[in-house]
Image (cartoon, rainbow, N blue to C red; front, side, top):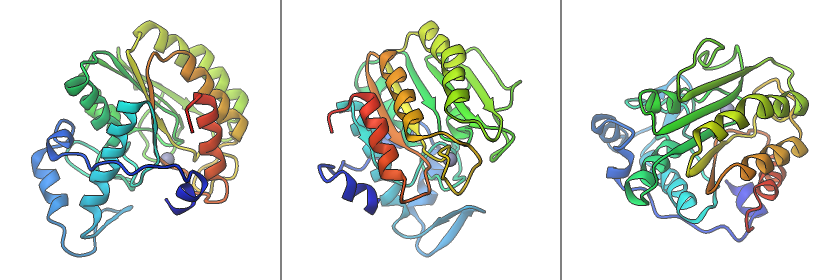
Length: 260
Ligand SMILES: [Zn+2]
């Protein structure tokens, strides 16, 4: 957060999401559990939490809601796309992109929404939240097989599109997949809003994964996404090289045509 705030000094703080907004995607019992944490603990093998986690996760989801409202980019952590309806997973507490999508439907009068997830990991939480919801298209590009193990080639549904990518894939493979799978899916679904779960851990210098996407590749993915989206918002997911992350977010912002 510090390196991104330094790189984009015009950032604005969002309001925390209201509990009712989070409960559109998560059970009341789970939200209450996160709110009751009073000392450092682990919510799953990868997900530490403490007394400030509830506030941080509400702020992160609130930033995603604000991004949807203004057509912006939520520079926020914790990320969200592994968070399940009733549990934390993989650094994620509340599923900010999903909360923002449901907010757009409930409060902004939007109907059909697409969530495009190009984080290097499969957005299993988002997929689970929207599996039975025909009003939300979920499209995920991710390294597979890889954490969290889901999102394989046979895991598909009418409004769930998984694009598993081999380790070592770079700009050429990602843009090929975008042209042949992602763009046709978006065009067929015709969403009123596209929310990008924008992780940058598929970058060639990211320490957590094995992909070779470059800054230019993220810029082009963003540009092509914007060309297919009547309304657009983005939510930061992964991206773990603090030296490259600001430049990658900047490249995506240029591609989106966002007002920085
Ligand atoms: Zn990731």
